[in-house]
Image 1: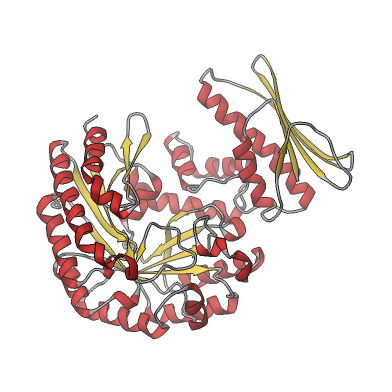
Image 2: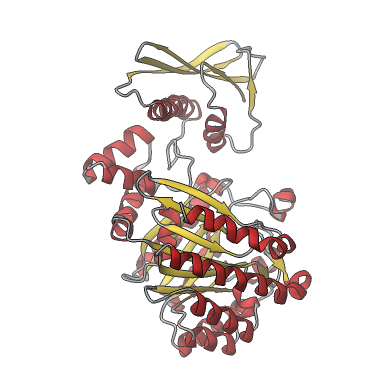
Length: 491
């Protein structure tokens, strides 16, 4: 498909929307609206007279116009940012309507290509709109389908008590442990396989504990109160029991956790879980953990690079329950290479037997830096309709297990242009998950590859403060990482 933009420069936004319709086709942006035989040309144009704006989108094939849509509207503001945002939305709407008619299809999320659809609902709530008005706006202004409207509105209402509050100086803490037993084919996180990174753990922990110590001083100086602590990665339980104990004790010594409502550790991989490690976590006050199967099908586990068997998941889960963990999350991924809807249902049947308090359902994203992306031709992936069916199966089982959707997000390059959904039993919401997604609270992130997000409530603005990803660079430059946080938090 060739695309010609006239009167505007929204190439990125147009390209992202087009990918949702023509994921596997090449998109060429051209300067001249010329059409070769059999080629398809999309022309998107913007013009204005005073405060009257005209947006056009048309598709031309073999020199003959097939479809044209036009939107005319007046601007009721002088705010340049608001004007640009509105123009962008109208351009996307006109293109969406043309492509929907041309391909005889609709997209579940309409024109939305961002990763946090619930933020739109929260903004509309803040403007004083009721649920009926919000539903109408999502349908008309974003072309969202009824199923996704219901989902996003339900989740926003569950999240509301956690994020619609005045600045109370509360923050969340994220601690990165960037090590894993092996690297899964779909992974793009900055994790280091243990066979290469094991010798660096001691040095890394020394640098991390130094950053924890100094950050604790900064938080105290700024009067910040820690609401949630999340230790992720990677796989934190690649550390041995003594290393885990030392890390958590150091956090508790140098960061005031007297206001903390939850402490989460991603145990994740069952091949890293032992009784000693779980006992340490329980003893040190961790009250949420993850034990992540991704799938309960052995063939798929082998294909994606996991070094455990389904029974390991069951045993790790049973052990965690025996030790006394009553908030356990389990992650699964739909659309894994070679899997079909029946295999996803097999996985859900096994998870139903375990009856976890939390379940996170990811739709496979083919990320740029993953081995899956590099060798995509070697892996059979499910088509859009099959992936939708898989998500429906997980939703049906979640209902059977009395789990409700409480947070969600989307990613680039997801199969079917769909979403990830976090489910929980009532009153088992993970505060950190809600805060990291809705971006209404500062997240102070420590460790290699961790990205702090400092929230300025008065301006409704977020400032990213990234740590370097490379392990050696982090160890060498940890003072710099601390200085960045001090500068931003002291503003």
